[in-house]
Image (tube, rainbow, N blue to C red; front, side):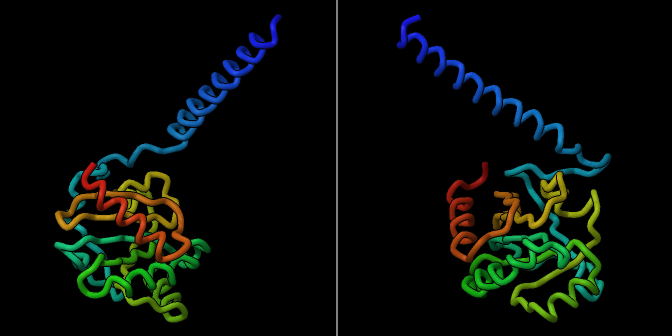
Length: 188
């Protein structure tokens, strides 16, 4: 067999194998993502996420703040090391935004008392709410089918789910870049 033909066959095999690997990875990811619980409506990108409700750390049910503004909602827990590392990053981003920028909101997926104890040690300037971590929590409603943390979403001023982010942000600049990219892309 000629060397050129051998190299051609090797390249075809390699490309075919890579394509098959990517296809199989997608199928495995689909299989690992559970369907939403019966009766739970999951908001898709571009759909309305309203009403956005939360439970304050003292137990009151309220509308989340920032209606009519961009809202970055971060789901976290004090038992989640990447979430804990991300809190100062989100706080720095929130402080940069001021009263008219993106409204940062934290939702602790744990007992309110645990969230309060954590916030005594690591205070933040943005509002924090709490709810039980479950297969029906608001992170799942906003697309976190696997229930992994930290999970962040961006809601438009019109109340639409614009972007989802599943991993911690390393610094405030990365948060700003993600928000700007999402805002520029608009509603999918």
